[in-house]
Image 1 (cartoon, rainbow, N blue to C red):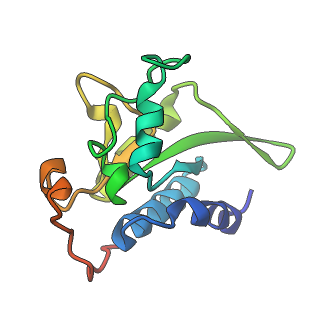
Image 2 (image 1 turned 90 degrees about the horizontal axis):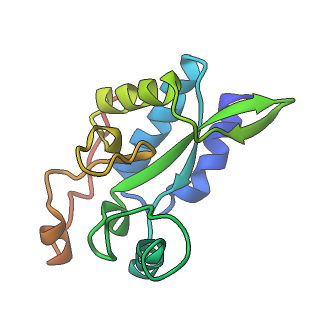
Length: 156
């Protein structure tokens, strides 16, 4: 599996994210790849409606609970969060691996070194695939219309 392919696959899911957050996601893919860990981006920006559909799972719709955040209460809704999945490679094909192993925890560490908040550190609802960069803004501030800075240079 080539790095360029992982980065190419990520681009569609990175659209809609704040440019700095998208850059940090790309850096996470690169740094994990350097350690032999292959990750894909599974989610980026989510609309309020998409968030509400996810929130309904395991509550008013069949399925298991996958989020505690209603629409407007997730950094995904403001382009400041993304989710990943660690993958295995079998005969050149990426196979998502949702089983927690050392690679997931290493990806979490790498993300934190890049300045991202990792959902695997959360106390009440561990969200191992989740990373966010909030610019110090609360969800209440974002819902009220406050915006993160638009011209930010990513630290490499």
